[in-house]
Length: 383
Image (cartoon, rainbow, N blue to C red; front, side, top):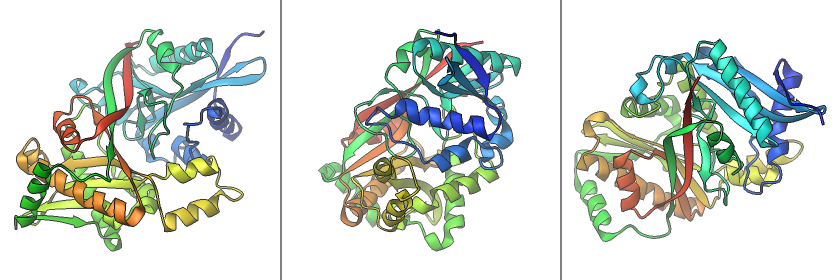
């Protein structure tokens, strides 16, 4: 048996091998949802994904006996390098991600090559896995392998945790998601809080207006950038990334599933909910052609799904940790819950990810009766 060789990805043919590797190595996992190939190409291609405008990336493939046996990305974000170190990123912090490997020896060889590349770029610390940024699929799944991930969430081989931790990586942060049975009414206390908010003339919780999509998207991202700016791992969106995210999410956007809360006429909070596109994507195995596009088109016209995902929620800083913030959150959750049941036939929701030290959001998740169903772990290692 020949040794393991690690080579850089160079050109479209190698990129195809890199993407194919992920599909092949995860094909036997019934809970792995194959991403659409077009989205993988977009993610990894400068000019298609604005992340690359302020980042540098190198992809690597592992070979043994003439076969591709693994893959990894190594990259760093110039915007992340400017963030305060106490917030998780900061000067000298690089990343690797998109790890897939047939065995531990290959995984360690890939990680070692990614670390070497990062050192060559002047990095002194690695934060991983990041695929590719904190706004995409950060962290390694360490809990929740027994069910498929929802839209825009990662799913990883359970063996990877021991391999990574055995390679000198220490946990630095956990991201959790909460599962909620939305068919059940909220407790009487929460219902009273919601009704009180409805009587408050200063409060207006409204649906987004698709006819003014760009305006609404800007409102949401401005609140998000302001609300999350003190969070661990935060990196602000650029204008190009704002436009890109809006374009990417627009097919999934439904007016009745996204709420903006206004106080005295000013937008102060939002909640973004998406129907779980992973349900139809799992059925077509990530392939739009030759006939998968028909399934997806029909689903987009009438997205009946079991699960809704709440990927993003934000409240302006001046209201954070206040009773008003909790009240607005409960109102938005309740309004979306009603719509999800009546119009989309949904029975459950997944909320998150949420940082494991975000006490405000954890308190809200606990109050509505949700429980942790998935945990992602981010590791660090000095270079």
